[in-house]
Image (cartoon, rainbow, N blue to C red; front, side):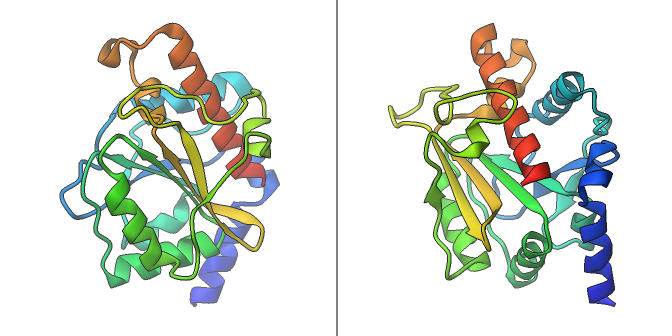
Length: 217
C-alpha cells in the first residue's frame, strides 16, 4: 500500500501535472516552541507573484499548515518552513519527512533569524549521512527566470553573508535552506517590514526561482 501511495505521489509531481499549475504549497508545522506560523502573508504573496509571472494557477487561498508527522504531507510537492526559534522532530516526524523528501518532495527552509542552531541538528536526524552543501553563485537555482549572482540579502542581522545551503540526494536537491537572507520577510506585505520595493522585488524574484527550480529539477 505504501509503494502504491508513493507511486501516486510521483505521478502528481510529473512535469505535465505541474505545468497545469494544479497544486498547492503548504507550510510545515513543527514542535519545539518555534513560531512556525511566522510571516503569514509571505507564501500567499509569493504564490500570487509566481502565478502572475508564469501565468500559472498555484492555489493560494488558505495556505495550509501541515504537521510534520501527517501523511497529508505527500499531497504537496513543495513545503515551506520558517521561524525564529526551536525546532524538534520526533522519530515519526523524522521518518515521515525523510520518506517525503526521498519520494520527490521539496522542503524549503527559510531562517527568520534564530532557527539556525536548531534546524541544523534536526536535519541531521533526517539525513544522518548528509551535510548541507553551499550552492555556488553559478548554480542553476540562481539562473532560472530571474538572474542572480548568489542568494540576495534581504535583511541584515549579524553581518553574515546570505547562503543557499542544500541537502542533495541522487543529484536532486531535496531540501533548500536559505540562511541570513530573510526571503520570507521580503515576501510579506509591504507594510509589515517597510522594505524597499527593490528588496521586496529581489525576494519575490528569488522565491520564483526557487519554486521554478523545485518543480523542474
